[in-house]
Length: 248
View 1 (cartoon, one colour):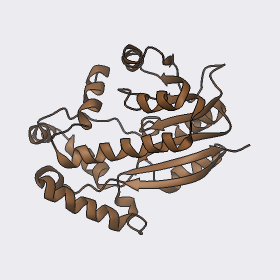
View 2 (cartoon, rainbow, N blue to C red; view 1 turned 60 degrees about the vertical axis):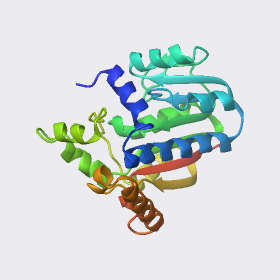
View 3 (cartoon, helix red, strand yellow; view 1 turned 90 degrees about the horizontal axis):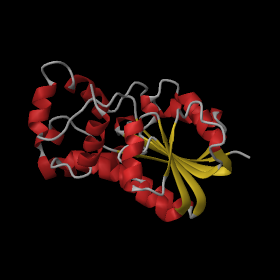
View 4 (tube, rainbow, N blue to C red; view 1 turned 90 degrees about the vertical axis):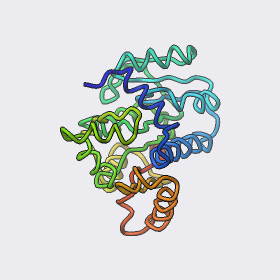
């Protein structure tokens, strides 16, 4: 069983991992999301759904006058509050947001909906907290990407200890219970009342190459990522990203 402290430690490790592929996969996502926050422009109020270790708080605080965070896990909110006392933390479920929360100019939901059984309800809850014309920044893994498939194998009994020995750093099962294809995510975004303005894909993972290929292996994965993005095989890339506007 994962503890909140273990999850925070893991999230912080990912961006400084000794494994080049692991580090690249997560740093790429962080940089894309931070750029999307900056592109959205300065605003009055922003909310992050599921802030985790608070990696995006500096970017949100730099762009918005008021920043809030909502999570179902008190320890995550305590971690954010300790680091950023000016951030308003809310214990609550985004599928049924507390009354009076919002409206916000921007809501960030990065690597969260895959942990929520009813992601459609989560997106409706997010829409209810956004101002008309407000911005949603969303990222979530692609359902059939090699990394997600390999992760299911990696945590089988007897294999996970070997994986941890290879990486020599925290490796925890992520609890992805609601992996979706791009078609499903797009449909749910539109059904919640959003208009998608921008999409992106990143993250080529090759089993064994990632673990043992070092920097040459990473260069191969990066070349494949460029080839696959925009192709019929783009479902092989790990992460899907969206910038969407609330209608009205």
